[in-house]
Image 1 (tube, helix red, strand yellow):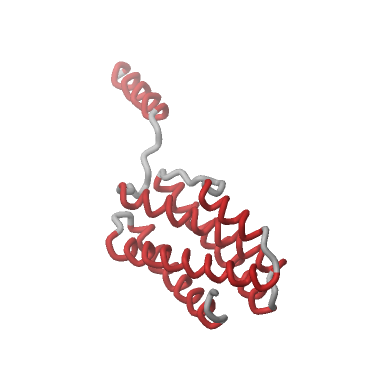
Image 2 (tube, helix red, strand yellow; image 1 turned 90 degrees about the vertical axis):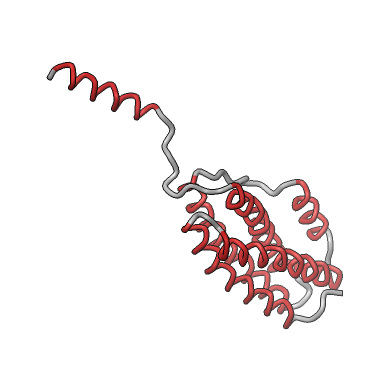
Length: 168
């Protein structure tokens, strides 16, 4: 009996040293989805923040406020799900998005508004397609549900952007 107890203690100690297994495993496609939309969401939140402060029109400022608010919430939900699935999220913009953000930030007036709309329409189209695909074919149940819910937000943002006019 004493040997059995020692064996159980040794097994428990070994298990404590092993890395925790993700609650909901993620496929390579799920991981690629998280990597893509986490960068897009971070860019959208940051671009929305500068639009809110330096947009040329109230419509752009208001839309920027919406982007910042919604994407901060979405980014937080994605991070929680990704953490649970063992998927790391890059906390900073990648070089491409950093460059795009810097270019946008350097503009003012109507040029800023046009570039903001163009950038937002482009990123929402790409992310919208990724959310729709993940909602349909993702392997991680939490990510699938998140993608379906968030796709509706992306569609709403696309409608708002189109209502503001064409990105010239």
